[in-house]
Length: 196
Image (cartoon, rainbow, N blue to C red; front, side, top):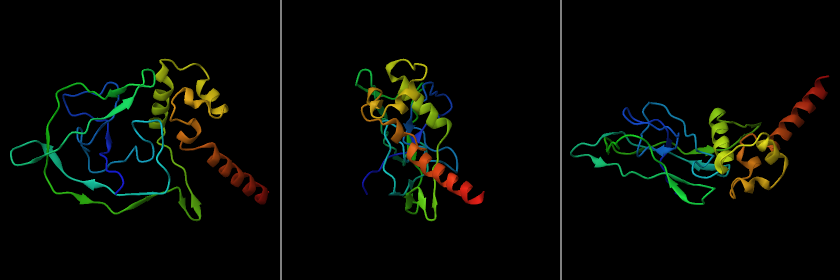
């Protein structure tokens, strides 16, 4: 095991609010449904950076509920991010009183999952759509403003995304990167040529 980390979680309990849509994690707001998605599997939630492709992961799952006598307490892991204007670490907050949680069951583990874009003969690309857009807008706005055409300017100027974030490359951050666009366009062009 290289890294173990709770999943990002954005949905607060009744009586709490998350007005700035800052990620907490499942030690604060556990998954409140029988199905879930790991929205930060590839994109780190506290940095404008992506994890490498072709990683192997598995998930540890434990049922939790409100803390009660006899339960093992869930230790809260605080979430934070670096403010690129001040270069300071900012703790994520939410409105409402914290709700102490306790474990209701022992841990179970999923099978190991390969995180890859390649399943021969296929190569795939996926975007979380609106979530990716919201995150990119948040990164672009870290200096306090998003100028008209700012994203396009960054995409057309290789290497200048460091002005937004030292760790960020706009091209590598975006899931559907120009590299994949070129590959898909070449395949499309070749298939149209053969079919004409």
